Image 1: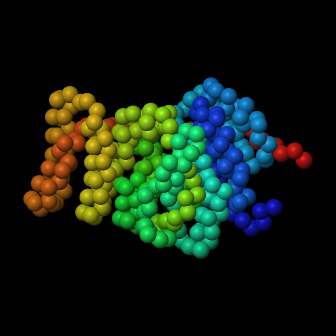
Image 2 (image 1 turned 30 degrees about the vertical axis):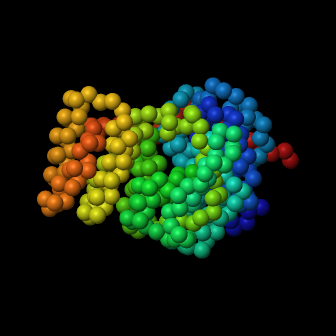
Image 3 (image 1 turned 120 degrees about the horizontal axis):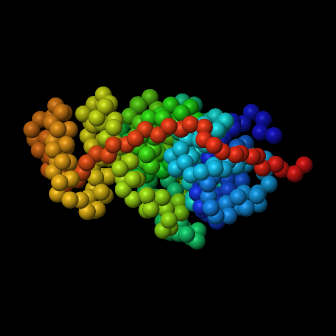
Length: 329
């Protein structure tokens, strides 16, 4: 029995990755911290995902299979609203935890009472599970961070969603605004948390989760939709938020990063002209001196492509069936 231990909700959204999913589930069930629920959100997979789930016999597993594909973001939202834990982690179906993932983060929450999330560095592996590299370290040692330093972790790609344990309430606070970034809703969540300087987050180094790199990764097959989402994640608070000049500059750097990747795609001259005019209007709205204005203009002009019109996604309840995997008595 868990006693007074806090309940952790682990959410695995999945679609047609049955074999990788099996490894992800096994890694959650192998956690040394035992008081968790595991929610598996199946977005109408056409492979043998249901058979994989049937192979597990653990009452902590709740399997929810949609009757149609609602899209990745809605699948995430459904899992968040179905969760019951005080803490929450979203594990991508192709990644996996090491046994101390939950215990190390719960320990940090117990030592730092006012924090909202804990994240760590992580390892990369290939499609066969062989470790190939480690992520960049965000800091030299365990650190409580917030604000601009936290936003820099987003810009440097050292803060990864699946390597993070959140307080559930903080995810609920920002998630409905974050989904306007579409497939980059996780980046938008981290940006919004960073912009609120009351949110304290702990970083520590323990490589307790593994990111699998393969040809069918969402970041590789999502194409321009993922990049559009990243632009929206940085541009929306920049355009509508009331932030200091230094925060605005960091948000511009984030948008430029996404524009830079988009710049590798082919665009016609008409799109580039429209984007340049749009950029000039954006930039001229800020009270910067001429020297800084010219520096930004020279830096950003090559990446000025049209800002996407990201539609607001509604979460709804969805048409789904759920069942709990019962353990034998």
